[in-house]
Length: 244
Image 1 (cartoon, rainbow, N blue to C red):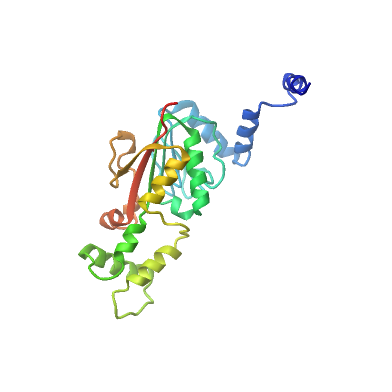
Image 2: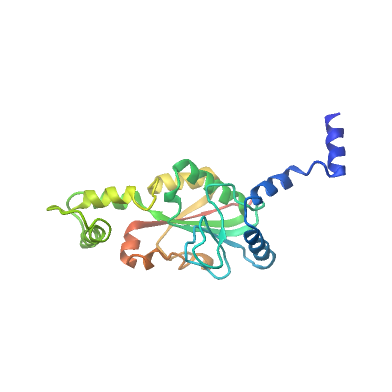
């Protein structure tokens, strides 16, 4: 009886298919301009590539998005919410220095959403600060690069600090507390998070490098700091949504 009632409601249009309802709910909070940009992008661009948390780093041929629109050509999308897309429609997802701004639970949920919207064979690339880099800053035995990083960070971000020592403790504390950082991953934690979201073939990359032409030279954090400091801070991971 219940099945007959459901069939009748569907036939009369009073009950939309569940998949359509979910899609409508995902899209409803988008601004009209955002919906138009998304529809235009999805109707024309292949491969389909989504950048989350782009800031002002807008890529040609990508759907560039951020929680706040800082420049033209950006769609407002909140990575802590369900993404406003159908399942399995993107070939690539990329984010740089975004996931550390989310609570751990929200970060894992965001990775699961990325997995959902990727096609089988699609890839994700995440660049984020590495906890090990902060651990290695502490104490003696620093390299010249690490000492230069500490000195630069203190001068730029904590100039009011007048200390006699190396200052690494201030730099480390500042890194955890500033810029809205909420969770800093290490390799094991981030790799496990991608695997729990469903990704396989987890691969670690250097900044700007990839075996896939579509994922090379994407990172731009080195425009805000020096390239060598960015390479010191940042780890880059890629994962695959396997066929089937």
